[in-house]
Length: 150
Image 1 (spheres, rainbow, N blue to C red):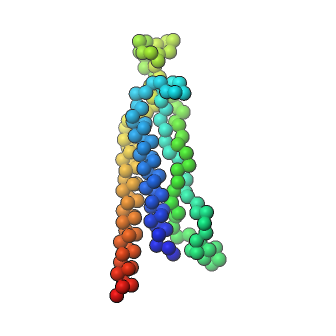
Image 2: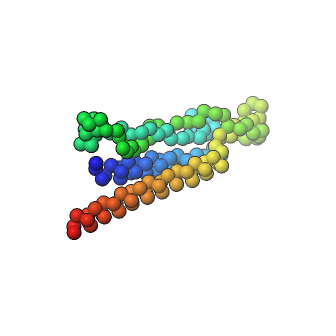
Image 3: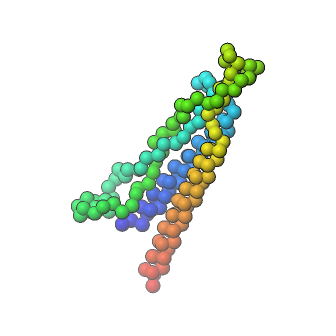
């Protein structure tokens, strides 16, 4: 088993969580945007993740196939797409607003600040967990080098 598989899986998690934090930051920045290039209010976005599949077969994967061993570890994650939440935002009565409809209502973005902050904290904690996993893998590799050097 390669000692770099764990680092590789955690590194993919770092990349995915960083993208997730960027999308959440964009949602927060556009929490009051009532007019977009596509027309209408801004709609929150979110990242869709999927397990990463390794295209190149490693020696470990070949052994698992030949010997019938079950996989012992994941191979990481990747972002498949950034999707848009289609739900309508709240309608606020403001007839003087330039984006008001004929009844005087303005559609506000469907961004909920509490939800975005919880998602940001979750993404931050997941990022920290992946950093901890990488540091643990590095520490184990250093200990292995110390043992082999004796």
